[in-house]
Image 1 (cartoon, one colour):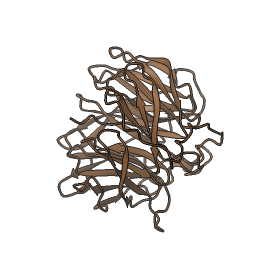
Image 2 (image 1 turned 180 degrees about the vertical axis):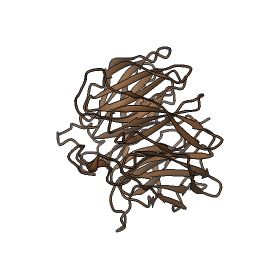
Image 3 (image 1 turned 90 degrees about the horizontal axis):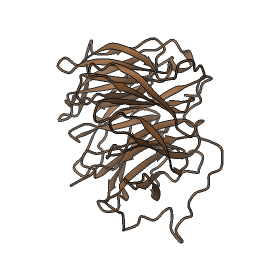
Amino acid sequence: MTNAREPSRRDFLTASALGLVALAPGAKGFTWPEDSQLDDELLYVGTYTDDGKSKGIYLVRMDRRSGQLRLIGSVDAGANPSFLAIHPNGRVLYAVNEVEKHNGRATGAVSSFAIARGTGALSRLGDQPSEGSAPCFVSVDGSGRVALVANYDGGSVALLPIQSDGSLAPATSVVKHTGSGPIADRQSEPHAHCIIADPSNRFALAADLGADRVFVYHLDAEVHKLRHVEGGDAVMRAGAGPRHLAFHPTLPLVFVANELDSTVATLRFDAERGKLSPIDTRSTLPPGWTGTNYPADIHVAPSGRTLYVSNRGHNSIAAFSVASSGALTLDQVVSTDGDWPRNFSLDPTGRWLLVANQKSNSIVVFGRDQESGKLTPTRQRIALPSPVCLRFRAHVS
C-alpha cells in the first residue's frame, strides 16, 4: 500500500506527540464507569495502534444537547482496530484488525466484542481471520446473520457467519477480485475497500479501488454465501478508485466516493436483477482548487436530501443537496478544522456531524441544520490518537 501518490495507512499516523487524559490510579487502561447516562449518545472510535500512542478502541460520550464530547474508556482490541461495525441489535461490535499477518498467516483478522447494556463497555468474544491481508472495512447485513469484510491488500471480500452469542465463525465465502486501473502505483491489482448489503438484503455491493469497479454479489445470509452477479457490476471511470458506498434511503440509487479522482458517482441500482448503471459524476472539491486530495467516507442523511463526503488533503466535508430525481448539487465545502478527515458520522438525532481527523488526532463536532443539511462549526472537539472510524451505539429497547 506504500506508494508515491499516497502513503500507506500506517504512514498516515502522525508522528507528533499527543497529551492523553490521565489513567485512573491503579487501572490498566481507562476504567469503565457504572454511571453511563443513557440520555447521552455513546460513540466508539476505531484507531491505528502502530505508533504505540493509541490504546485501541475508545468509548466517548456525547451530550446530545450541546454536542460536547467526553472520553469514557478504551479497550485493547489488538493491532490496528481501524474500522468498526455494530450489530443491528446494538449488543455486539466488530472491528477489523488491519494487519498483514495474523497468527503466522498472510491475513488480517476481525474481532468481536459484546457491548454491556448499561455502560457500553466492551468484552472480547474472539476473532477470526479475514482471509486476506489488511482488512479495511467491515459491515453487518440487515438480518444480523453475517459480517462482510473487505481485504485491501488481499483484493478480496469475505463473509463470516455470526453465531448466536454474536461471535464470528470462520469465513464461509471468500471472493478474490480481478482487474486493474491506469494509476500504476495504486491500481496494479485489486484493492477491495468496502462491502455493504443492499436495503433488500438480497445483494451485497463491493467497491474496489484497484479494479475501478463496484462488484455486485447475491447475498444469501441463511446459507452464508456470496455469489457474483454476472453483468451486474458498475465499471467506473478509469482511474476513479471507488472507495466507499452509500445507498439512498428511498431512491434506487447508490453513491460512490472515488478516492483517486476526487469525485462522487451516482449509480442506479436495479434491485430485481442486481444490476448497477452509472448516471452521473460530480467533483467533491470547490471550483478552482487543484491540490492533492483523496475522498474517504460518504453518507446520506436519513431524509435523503443531503449527501456528505470527506476530503483528505483539502481537509473538508463536501455537502451535496440531493434532488427528488437523485441529481447532486454541491452546496457547501466546510473545513474539518483538522488534518486528514477519514470516517465521519451523523449522530442518531441528526443534529450533529462528527469527523475523525486522523493526522491531527482529533474528533470535531459540527452542528447540522436538519432541513438544509448545512454544517456549522462548533467549539466541541476531543483529542484522541489516530481516529479513523466513528460508530454510534445502536439504541436497544
